[in-house]
Image (cartoon, rainbow, N blue to C red; front, side, top):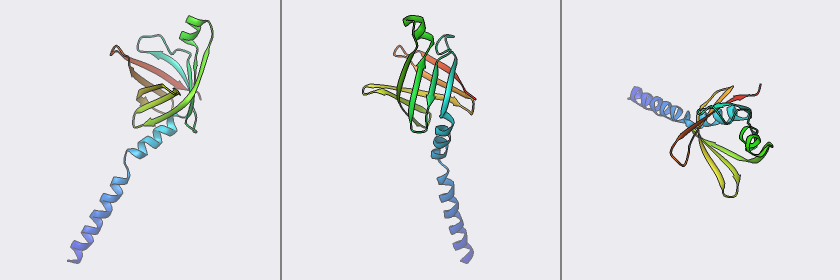
Length: 133
């Protein structure tokens, strides 16, 4: 009976400990990894965001500096500030009261960030960024 009681306690303890290492740990790690300044390298269509810069700060603010398409069409760089949230692999960018983007984080490592967006037409658009060192 003592062995059964000890086994049950061990089993309950093991189940409690294993349930604590959930996606919260992954989310926390991704939140930490995303903080910093990322330089656009290329996209799935070979165009934007080359030379674009996006900076994520630990206070959940974000700055996006548009260099590629903004200079091409307007002749000037454009900078936008907002806030960000990362839940599992969904990055939400809040640029204003009614301007929210939801982007899938396909990959995030110490030095690479891959973002995937589905356009209103249903096309998949992928952006590749490299972290400033």
